[in-house]
Length: 362
Image 1 (cartoon, helix red, strand yellow):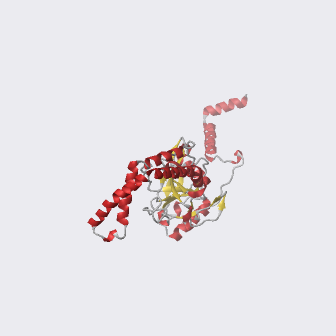
Image 2 (cartoon, rainbow, N blue to C red; image 1 turned 90 degrees about the vertical axis):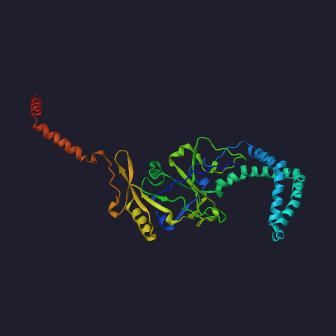
């Protein structure tokens, strides 16, 4: 198995939401989605030639059952047996070494005699595991064995605001990825779920028994999605805090996250007053310590965010603006004023008056 060092996660990752999800500041629950429920139907499609996993599994079984591997297994079995034997633990260290010297040759001899049986069994088990992985496990993962919560390292993505935040009527939550989601596995040495960086590729990832690094296919997407700059958290359905509702054929699984992991909230440029009020009330009620921003148009063709320190800093529409149904209804005040100035100047100019008199006489 090839293990690769994970890239360091950013200090903040952002989740984009539409205005209807303002309740997240009261529930502090978010959805982890099944891979089959994601908006990319090509998510988690891996490339493997027919039988490649089986042949790889048989080669691996052959390497594990060669004489040197069997001798290593015998040595380990003898050492473990002597170390964990309850009666030998009470004896002095030299006595235990004598016991190990007696047991060790016997353990090595037994593993060598059983070598053909071990090799045959191992090939059969590894081949069956490869078949189940190729046929069953990949499909089960897509159906919900593994769940995904997707974020972005960028708060200023124009397509993300359009696609996931209701054309700037929603908001983004900036989370600390290192402390957002407690790890539901009590045996893990990590207290919190790690954030995994998504790799954008042009070809489907390949899998083999010699390289079963799950990040190859659990964190790979087509390069068309590269603008999302995605980081994702992986989870299992057993730890869901709320479940039972089915949406588009997939169970809605909500998981708790830590309120104190919220570092920022960025309001969209078109965030309505009602949505802003709901968010601010919930933040105050939960006594959250975070930075609040709002997106505004900047000079040129873009936008920036301004820090909100008081209600006077907010720019919201209390009601939707009027719709111009005809160009004749539009008022170009500056243009009309400029045109009036032009007419006034023309009336006072001698050449302009002479031309006007000539045209009137003719």
